Image (cartoon, rainbow over all chains, first blue to last red; front, top):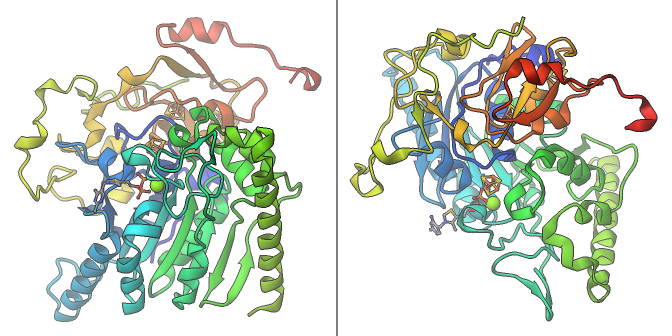
Length: 317
Length: 152
Ligand SMILES: Cc1ncc(C[n+]2csc(CCOP(=O)(O)OP(=O)(O)O)c2C)c(N)n1
Ligand code: SF4
Ligand code: SF4
Ligand code: SF4
Ligand SMILES: [Mg+2]
């Protein structure tokens, strides 16, 4: 496959975007940063599916498309279903020699939000990975159902306020912890699973290229800060992502063949989750004395998980 | 030189997405629509720069979201070190980089989010926000001097 040079940003910038402007994502939305980077990682033909969510509604505003590749929009549950069907058809037609260009390399990619990935499309994603289709699934994890106004999902972290898990005098927001989707996908035995972040552009590009090059189903959870629902200034999208990776709320790591875990980014100065939370309106209420214990709990959980990741990396199991 | 006319000959930004009265309503859309992004054969499109492509009128490249902006980023090429931070993080594919050089901003697609200004590492910054109505030469004439470290 034709992967593009990611040696440095200058080389990377010689790629010609296949994701066009005048989509209607909010100013500063990280979804498009992640999509652009994926599409600039390869010169190969791409067949992409997106299920319903911010990315889909904003890039296919009739009569416009922002995609310069084959792109399929499908229902909320079915990004993985649609792309695995396309991949199976491509394989069959290749075998029969009925493609226009039988040798042209094609990569299959699905984009889903966390709502569709962690919750509503979970079963379909699991099925597509179990069937072993050759595709890369990328979850744009903004930790809420952003497109419908910010409802909680199983990716929403404990303590965040959402429209369906609202903070107030009797509640500190969401009470349940975030689902560990990366571990779940690794447990499927997928050959490549990772959690990546757009502020670390190089590790993200490397991970994308690895996933595209790996035969079989690959899963990548990407941190996608959402200025609208996380409540921060759009200009700070990358700054917030820095706080996310440096507080280890979003550790950056990969798991190969379900067991070999590699940490891809080790912050030089680990910051507190308090600093990360303090920069976003969705956690504002936690700074009241009565909810302070939630921040302390999250810090404990984050520390424990970082410890677990490091031990797993060392043990190679 | 700042080549803001780089794409002057193509069909970029013709339709204002802020003024959609001429578009088809949701209840008039045919189910299962296929939109072709390009006129004719799109083979090898990844090798073609925007100005070499024949975008169809269905491609959002031909639309503009300029009316979303209140402030606009202005680019000062004299300070720029071509690091391409702005290129990699612009969410709206609006940084015009060619042959490893940053050339300017695509004002048809820029929404004025200010991310590029935040990630620009030079001192003074090579990108700064100005009111949408400030002429480019006026903005450039107001560029700040290099800041000392303590003042930052
Ligand atoms: C089966 C079904 N249920 C509900 C909806 C309504 N709906 C559309 S987008 C959306 C939220 C999408 O959230 P997520 O997948 O996290 O993507 P985001 O918008 O946050 O990027 C919902 C609930 C739908 N389209 N289909
Ligand atoms: S609501 Fe959030 S995810 Fe959706 S377009 Fe806006 S910033 Fe992006
Ligand atoms: S202001 Fe935002 S949209 Fe405009 S060029 Fe800068 S990063 Fe891109
Ligand atoms: S971020 Fe600043 S210095 Fe780097 S290429 Fe853009 S304008 Fe030039
Ligand atoms: Mg979401």
